[in-house]
Each structure stands twice: as C-alpha cells, then as structure tokens.
Length: 576
Image (tube, rainbow, N blue to C red; front, top):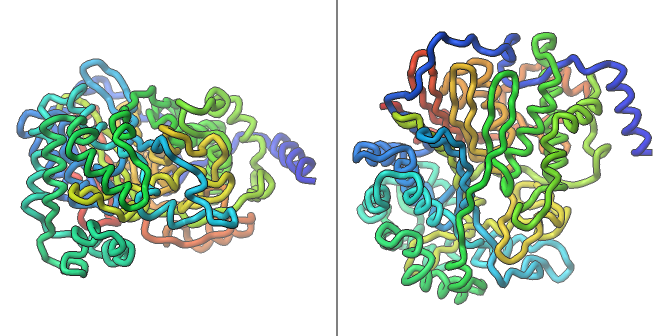
C-alpha cells in the first residue's frame, strides 16, 4: 500500500508541475532575484568583524588581532576563551568543524577537528541488559567521551594559517582561566541544571561546585588547572595535550572512572583537511561542511530542491510548505546514508545531484504535507540547543566560520582530574543502536556505527556564502536544528538582510521524525498557522533558539557588519 501511495504522490506532483517556490522567514517577494552587480567591488575589507556568543571571547579575538594576528589567530583566541567562559557549550575537551577562506590563495578549506572513538570502543557498553540504549553511559561519564579534537585543531590553525605563535593566541584564555571572570547567567543556569551530574565526579564538583554549590551571581570563577593545560598546549603545540603531562592525566582520570582511553588513542589523533561542499543557488555560492558533518549535505540537498521553485509566484503559506518538505526529505537521507568518510562509502554524487533533487521535488504535493511515515517509519525526540559558533572576517579578507561543541550541556559532565578539562559526550552522536534516536532525536544507520578511530556524524554547518556583491560568514549551535537555522539564515541573507536581521530571523525546523514542525513563538501569524495545519502539519512551539553569529561583508561599500544572536544577552558582534 505504501509503495502504491508513493507513486500516487509522484503522479500528482507531476500533474501539477514544479513551477512553485519555497524559502523562509520574511519571504520577500523578490528574494530570489540576484543582487545588482556593482561596477567595482572591494577586494579586501581593510577592517575586522567578529561575532561570538560571549563578549570576553570576542574581545579576546580583537586582542590577538591587535598583536598582528589574522583571522586564524583570532579564531584560536576566541575558541580557547570560549572553553573557559562557556564550558557548557564547547571547550578543549571537545571538537570543532570550520569552513575557512584563505585570502592570499583564494582557497576554501574545511578543517575537521571532530572527536574520534577510542580503540577499545565497544557498542555493548552503551546498551542496557534488554538491548535498549543506555542513556547514562552514552551521555555521562568517561565512556561517553570521544578523543578530543579541538586542541589539535587550534594548533593546526596556528601552524598552517596563523601569523602568531600559539603562546600569543592562547594568552587571553590562559589569563582568563588563571585570574578568573564573572560567569554570565547562562553558565550559572547551566551549572544549576546539571548540578546533580557534576556532583558525581570529584574534579567536576571542584571546578563547577566550589564549596559544594554553584557559584553565586557576581562571584569570580577560576579554573587554574585549565590554565595549566592551555599553557602546555601553547608551549609545545598539540604534543602538549596529546602526550606528556596532560595526556597522562587524561588517561589516568578516564580509566580510573571506568573509561577506556589509552595514551595511543591520544597520540594517534589527527586533524583532517577536507574539501568543502559547494552549492550554487540563485547566483549565490554556498560553501559549507562535508561529512563527517551531515549539515552541508542536507543544506545543499534542500537548496537543490528549492532551486526548482519560483518564489515570486507564491504566497507565504506555500513558501513555508515547500521549505518544510525540502527539510523533511533532506533529513530522511541524513539518517540513512551519512557517516565518517574515512570509514563509509556514501552516495554523495547522488545526494548532491540536481537530478536527484528534481526527483525529490516531484514527490511534494502542492497543497498537502507529506507524512514522514510515507517515506519511512521511525521515531525521534526534541532537538537540543547546545554547542557554539563564531564568525570572523579580517582586514585581508580571511574568513573563519567555526562551530565548536562538547555535545550536550556540559558534555559528559566529567572533568579529568588535574587538567580542568571538561570532556565531551560525543559518543552519543554515533548510532549506538541503529535506528534508535540519540539525545537530539536523530536516527542513524550502520554508516554511523561506532568503530575504533572513527568520527561520529555531526550537524555542525559552518558556512560561507558569496553573493554577487555581499559575502556572509554564518553558523549556529542547536543540535539537529543547526542545519535548518543555518539554512534559514542563508535565505534571510539572500533576501537582503543585514547581520542583525539574519541572526534575529524567526526559525522553524523539521527533521523527518518526529513528524512535527518545531517553531519559534510568533514565527507565523494565526492565518498562516491555520492554513498549514489544514494542509496536514502539526506544530510545536519551542524556545530557546540560537545562538547564531554572523559577519557580513558588503563588497560594494566595503563595510563589515557583525551581529550576535539577540536571543542571548552576552554575545557580541563587533567591527573594528
């Protein structure tokens, strides 16, 4: 019956044709018209824009630029400072993915500093006796932690693209960890939320629950052990983390608490440079993340589907309808095909093909939602809102779009004794039990099953968008919603939005399963919601959303515009 129904959908779509449209948000009627080409476009900005989720991190980037650094040195400063001041979202115990543009060579590069599974990984460690997923070992404690990639990634940036030594770029983070800072409300709230889990591990409690309780508002927060760890990284490069004093402390702490890391796991870690995914959409070139991120593939697939629709001929309801249906199909493929490219052969040529997108487009009915059960039966949960992102454009036109994470809130909640390093819980991003949802509700197949040294699939989607006369560096945290937030942000940029309009843009999300459209409150008016409901959509309000950080370069006026998501009070987008 389902087979026949799919062909019925195909036939109806073919009969009604495909000259219809989709995109997002404000949906300006002329949003898909290419911008007018200026007679002369600037070749370099001559000034700098940084947008991150924390004021101290943004200022750390500018401090390093003032020392003669470039965008890559500034990225090291911002990332390492976030490790100290925003540990609930990222840190040197986690990993990152970055899409970068090197101005001197006009090259776009993807830097993969994603975590890896240890050599002794055993899927049975993540199962209950009845074969169901063990959420505790997957999310809390040392078994949930992959081998960190961020320290190696920062050292890689310094060695291959920066102008300054690591000692200079890491100096702001080392000072902040050693001398202390006043936590913002989000960090204080996160500690309150995870107090019970942090208290399970003595070193975690020592750092985040001084005196047995969360720090008070206005209290100075110190992490001298992390300052020491960063000093060793600064002095010796990646060997200062992956061997010697720090490595031994990490392995000893992990194994004492029931984990399985070895010194060889750490010394074997390698950063990977990969070719970004590039997709052209209505005169805009979108440069984004390849696997082991699923984000770029999904974004490219969605844009390829939408490219066959004419936005100017559609009302708001149908524009939203087609965007949701494109999201639904991209996430369906996300779940089935994607994994670590060093371990899994993926049909990327098919998934990125405009002909494949054309076939998917034919399955979308013009006035009716496609139940996900028609595509495949699965289950899912509510996506999380963790991770962090920052964007940089420097005076020479170097660009860094970088998304960093420890996965869930405070990662594993496990601090390795004597290091100050909070470890990630990225093992949950593997398909530990095929076709069972992870904490973000995402499903996976054997392509994303854990294996020694393998990188778990990610939704991180750091992107650079080059239009006829404007360029954007964009990304966001948000678990599985990263993909759709970045998609909607890019569409808002194409619509002509400035940095502040892009980061403030209202958001919605569909990830195939659960078959629900998650919506930021007040995204749609009552009439739009009612019409979409009659088409078969189910809506669920969720909050918070964010926190997107964007820098835009207008090459006509040679001005930079930087903005941090208004959904977070402590972010800072700054041009100097």
